[in-house]
Length: 176
Image (cartoon, rainbow, N blue to C red; front, side, top):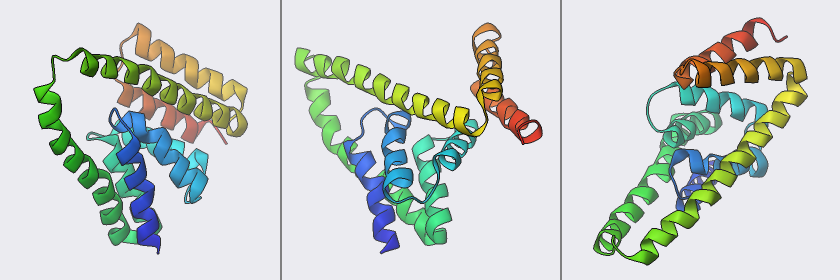
């Protein structure tokens, strides 16, 4: 039963999600944290931060890690397969259709309508992480990490992986 639950937890977000890994992370969080309770929101946020610091697509890294934590090697395989196979099949099927109609105004409008939805989903995920950070780390540490991250990213154009690593070091050394 656990393999079926793992399959569904990653299959459903990858079928209904549009826009790649970052766009489906809130859907995966809803399944992994909300529906099945395999992780806390804090653990999910930490896993996501660490996964973003590593190369390769985030959705497969999250699937592999969660699958392994829940059901070992078999769970990792099932979760990654549920993430990759449906997307691959849909992509191959839709590619020919979209390519044929790539100049269609309807296809262009569809793409323009999807972008704000993805932006709102990412904003909702960010708000959830902010509230979780305020609750677990406190306002002072959240403000310090947020301000330092914003300055590093905007002012100094630091790669996000280094910002995440810096926040992990700060959290490991300073936050009790």
